[in-house]
Length: 118
Image 1 (cartoon, rainbow, N blue to C red):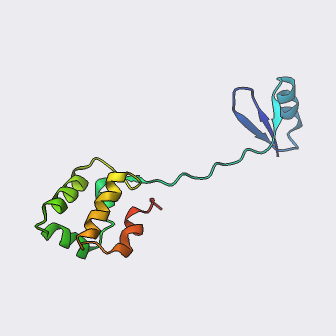
Image 2 (cartoon, rainbow, N blue to C red):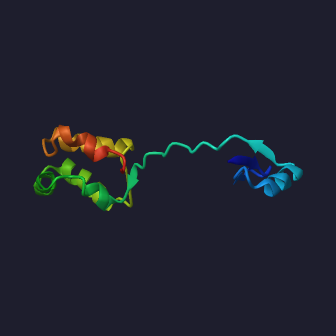
Image 3 (cartoon, rainbow, N blue to C red):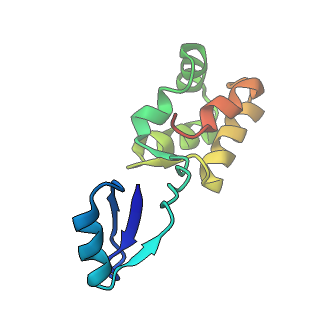
C-alpha cells in the first residue's frame, strides 16, 4: 500500500499494483506520505441523565429517593433534571461524593459510577 496526500489534507491509499493511479498522483504533485496513524479513541464521559442514573444500584437509588436530607434531594434533583451528565465535571463528582458522604452510595462503587462509557 502506498499513500498520497492530495495537498488538501485528504490521504489516498493505493495498492502498489495500481501503477496508473500512482503515476497520476505523482503527476498531480501529490506528496507520498507514510501510513496515517489512527488517533486513540477519546473516552466518552458525557451521557444522558437516565444513562447516568442507571449506573446506581437499586439499593442506592432507593436510599437516595427515600432520603429526607435536603442536600441529597438537591443532588438527586439536579442529576435527574440535567440534560446530560459529564462524569468528569466537578459538580458531578461532588454530587457522587456527597451521596457517599451521607452513606447512600458505597464508596467502592464510585469508580464505576464515574467511569467513561465503554
